[in-house]
Image (cartoon, rainbow, N blue to C red; front, side, top):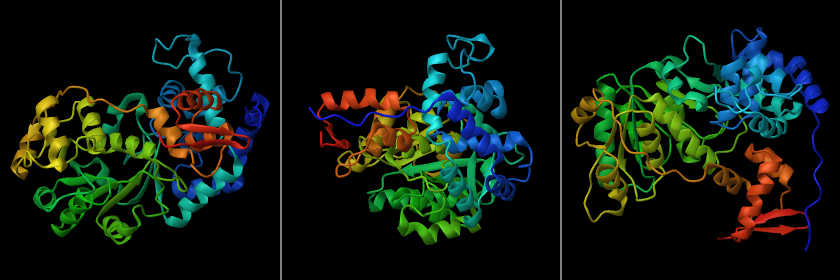
Length: 411
């Protein structure tokens, strides 16, 4: 059997050197100063580093930064990682256990590389972004409800103040029907005209209709994107995004250069749910990604609504599922949504897909073999964990091992 080339492990001394170089890099400091008014403070630059080396929703990084602060967290994890901070060895006090920290250091260290860091920062400056960090005056405090999964930073184009205003998430299918688009437009336009911020994901279909209706009504809207804000995705919404910047904000927790992978779309959905005070699913198939957003809203205790459709409509099957099985409230008008804002929804937990397999599947290629090291850097997982997941996928027939690395295979 052919084998993959043996990997070269990055030692503690090399990681400490990389951290020191990143902190002392003049280009990084200059760009940080252009992106954040308090970037002269080391903790601000270290908070930026955390955002750059982690994937969205990294619970271990979130817990570590919450426990120690960004400076001490970097010093600890890339220093003498011999025991969890404060002597915790089981994660029972809310701090990550040693094994989780060791795996974290492996995946974070793969991105602690000067060229990558400089490019992400310089692109953000060129595009005209602003970076928000927890504790900033304009940081949306309700993101704290995400706990250890809260964003470590947000990259923003537009008016950062709208992120803290009362918002309603309106989400739904990309392959929407005329009925779904009509209802989404009516809801978004009415809510925006009444001063509520319409939050959505910037995608084709229901998302795009909701953003446009809010703008037509003279209101504010926020688009939370899954990739870096240096490129419009979908490209067909480039003009819409420019209008949103003028009357709202584009937001992402992914730094410039980050591709909008399926895994990042799923993680992006938790930010949509957390930014909004209520979530309404207008149209969704039985396995629609909008149900993922609904699941996050239910987990956060946010009010959840769904618009009913024809019982024969496949594009409304997901909405009917939310109404029947997950305690969503029936929404037929903007008045229903306003009523929803007065309730705290406590719905059932909606099943989620295996997140780490999703991340690995996103970065596997059917044509280009990739080594575990390459897959680790692209996915934000540790090399060891990538290899374990590859073993699972190989048993399922989902990947093929070659002399040059691993390729995906149709399941």
